[in-house]
Image (cartoon, helix red, strand yellow):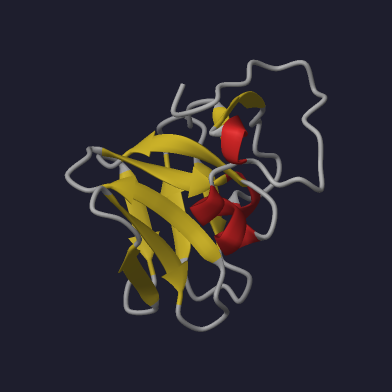
Length: 131
């Protein structure tokens, strides 16, 4: 039987599921991600084909730059998705997946922009920019 990866927002209005195994979790420390989440943005890529999102009427997309948009729940404000415009994959916030997620952080990006109130001490690769 194929594994299904599921998750959603804090209030349950937006739910997602995919039979595609998410890629490694990427921890992004850029200023936009830090401002959105309060620390860093940890997400895993999932191909759009095979991703089902329920509650799309509650999902809002915000174009955060010329290159990307971020999806969040209008009801509870949970940050859920990041997507490069025109891409065939979407990054899903690691914390939005239901347990057991079987996810693990693979590496850190935009470390040159990380907050000054924490250190990255997990021994994983760190890149100053996109990696």
